[in-house]
Amino acid sequence: MDANAYKNNVGVFDSGVGGISILHALAQELPRESFVFFGDSANAPYGEKSPSEVLELSRGITERLLGMGCKAIVIACNTATSAAAEHLRAQYPSIPIIGVEPALKPAALSEQGHHGRVLVMATPMTVRLDKFQSLKRRWGKEAEVVSVPCTGLAARIEQGNLDAPDMYELIESLVGEYAGKVDAVVLGCTHYPFVRKQIQSIVGNVPFYDGAKGTARQLRRRLVECGCLEERCKQGAIRFLSSVNSKEELDLYGRFLKMAESI
Ligand code: DGL
Image (cartoon, rainbow, N blue to C red; front, side, top):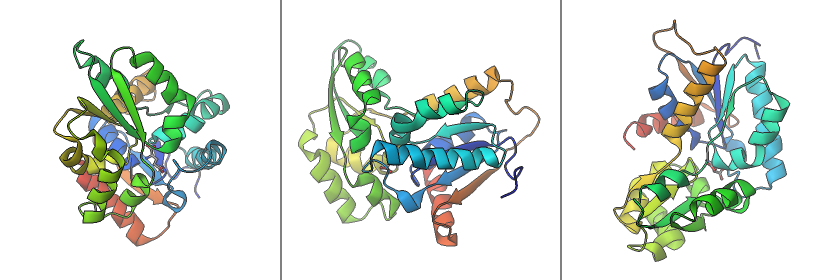
């Protein structure tokens, strides 16, 4: 691969299509930047692997993106952020590496002191690891936090066909017991915003939170800090790469980006 193929791009990655929900927010916030998105769909789901496997996969993708000339990395995956962000920052101290975490803070605080009950949906690994556990300790003082490891949901979203009956059945089996019993929902996996409407139809019409906009603002801050914000280009490009290297897969990513406009 050409060392300059994606020179000055922001490299964005996830285990698969989920990170496209973040990619969309990044491109909205920073339309002059060019982005290359790598979906590791051949290895999805990350959330049901071990942290060391996810660290090695994340390291490999980061090396590849930097090797193609990227100036910053966005880990558009809560799971990979928990397992790999600190290690990658230590390995590449001069590169802005931005992660995403469950948006528990705005969800807990927005209950305006009435200490609501917040449902956090995330992958089994995200729920288990320290990063989320310490967020939960911190914001669990402001609201009652119920976290649910949603085994199988990211893998099912990877398959597309998001309105099929089995999608609703899966969501019902994961969080149906909380229907009408929570005040807010945090989507702690970047795949889940693509089924926000389906989750809402089961859990109830409460406010939903995800980390996309916060991640986009953080990327802007970091690019400004390192003096590498794109200011000349009028309109950046968005390009896709995948570990499932087929036209169908890349077309699927394009369809998810289109879908991200309306979620
Ligand atoms: N989209 C990812 C996240 O935000 C991971 C989903 C998966 O591969 O399990 O956690």
